[in-house]
Length: 115
Length: 108
Image (cartoon, rainbow over all chains, first blue to last red; front, side):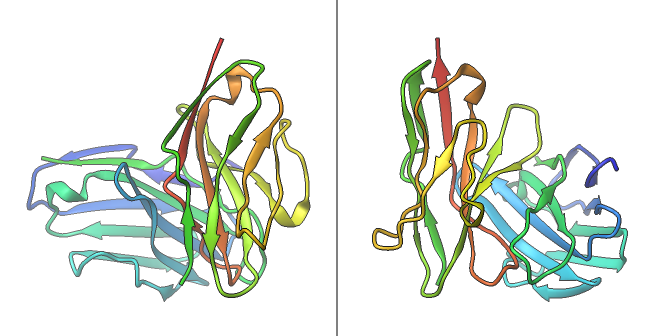
């Protein structure tokens, strides 16, 4: 297994543009997490899904952010419109299921720069 | 509310010296605590979890409920230990609440 896959790895966009980040969890994993990493705030949980259903989106910073998981093998995080303060590394992680205290498997991250 | 505090943003030690990365937490219940590591140009990965009481790459961490701490220790640091280290907590077995991380630099 290639692990959690994220695309693109790097994204540079202008303020006001729509940005879509993509994540493919490990096959068979039922739970998926989106995190944002910045120097100031470290790693923050944005939202997580279980069996494709959003469970907790309280970490989503604003209405400009939205996330979907249309099926078990794909999730998107969309920012519309993007702003310079959204510049960060966005990580996706997956685990086999909720309820256990197992390891979270992280993707390589997408480095987003909004100019 | 859950909170994880890593007081040091940067820790620099010489090769062979002991290293301790501090982590304090606040949680009203019984938390599960983890240390994750991110080596340069690599993915964030689990280093160890308190429930396993294991030693990985020479690192250990003991949960001290009285002091609400979960410090990461290694008696003799190696250059390859240089990385970003994150302490994390979960109270429900779901999402991880991370500290802001400590960058460890081991110099020869």
